[in-house]
Structures are given as structure tokens and as C-alpha cells.
Length: 286
Image 1 (spheres, rainbow, N blue to C red):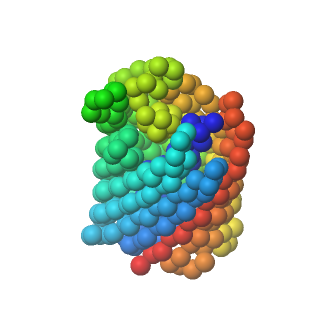
Image 2 (cartoon, rainbow, N blue to C red):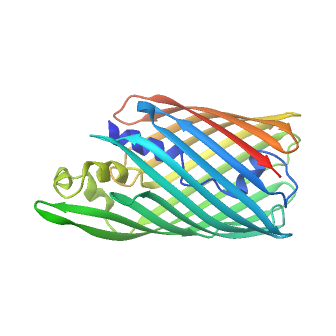
Image 3 (cartoon, rainbow, N blue to C red):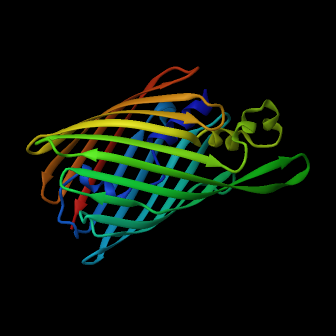
């Protein structure tokens, strides 16, 4: 049960919030600085805190700094996970945007990742197309009786893409998909013998690695707030189990410089009881 808990937690809480998602929360002047703060809570009192600072260092360049902490329950204990993000992005809203992002995520005593991604985005009046190739290094420990732990590493690569349409007066439509490839055979971690080589925490964390993701969303823009609905499906790279998330989110534009996000969702997982989660977020422009 706990492995599904973490798989679902990682599916709804990514290591960092992309700065290109500014469009979903407010319609800012493209060169504004901003601060994003987020809190999430789910099954077994799991909690996630995340903050991201977007600094306009010039008229067409942005420096991105992010950090987060998660507290989740594994088979035997609660474990703290940390994330850190450092990135660059060109001016928002231009016909072509590009960036470079480094991410760290995990727990250096169990399992952690370093990743490098290149977000690309093409914008027209009615359409937006984005692609994001990513390279990731996965680190984990094996345990041996009466011997020191041994560190192992493996490579992964992925490609994510999205298409959004804004041609209606107030409606928005979007489709997002991701495909992940791993150097190692991730299904070996689903073998009962793996419990003799890896800690329970490492095995639980490994179920958070996806094989694929597919999502669709629709949103309606009112005068001072935005209502959206999203359906997402994720397949685990370890045991091919399927996770489905249905969520509703509302963004309230309380002023020209401040917005508030409230999101709630229903998570359905194979061979486990479904449950709900809640997410709160706010963005300040300065």
C-alpha cells in the first residue's frame, strides 16, 4: 500500500514548478519578478512544501531558484525528501522561448536524482507548443549484511510535450504527454528478492519513477478568476501499475500582483484504495 502512496505523491508533486506555467496563474508583465509558494497534503498525512523565485535579471532573461521538502510514510518510517532547482529562461510570451534547468530530488541516504532539462516553447496568438527533453542520473544504495552500503547509478532520459489552444474567447484546451526511458531494467525492483538488496525506503521511492504520462485539461477564464479541470494517467516503470488523477483547480487573481491557487483531486490506483488530495499555492509579483 505504501509504495502506491509514494507513486501517487510523486505523480501530483513534481520536483519543481516550471516557470513557464506562469500563464496559468496570472497574466503578468513578462519581465516581472515573482515568488511561488505551494503546500500539498495527501494520504497518511503526507505533506509537501515548495517555493520558487523567478528573477528578471535583464529585459529578456530570467533566473529561476526553487527548493522544496516532502514528508512521506514508507513501509517502516517517515522519510524526508528534498528538492532543489536552478534554471534559466528567456523572456516569456515571445514567439520562441527556451531555457535550461537543473533539478535535484530525493534523499542522499537512500535514493536521489540529478537531472538537466531544456524547456522549449513556441507561441502564437491562439496556440502554444512546448517540448522538454531531459537527462537524469539516478543514484541508490544496495545493502549487504555486515558490509558497507554500495552506491549504484543509472541513466534515464525523457521527452515531454504539450499543445495548448487559446483561440476561444474564454476557454483553454491542452494536452500533455511524457515518455521515459531507463538504462536499467526498473522492473527488477518489483522482484521479492530486491528487499534483500535495497532498503524499504529505496524500494518505495523507486515506484515514483514513471514509464509514461498523459494528461488533458480544459479551463474557463472568468473576469477575475480561472476554473480548470484536468485528467491525468501515469504508468509506473517498476510494475506497470496505472494511476489516474482527476483534479479541479481554481486560480483567483486578487490583484495585479497576487494570485491564489486552490486545487483538489481524486486519485485512483490499481490494487489500492482511492483517496483525495489538496493543494494550495500563491504567487506574488514584484
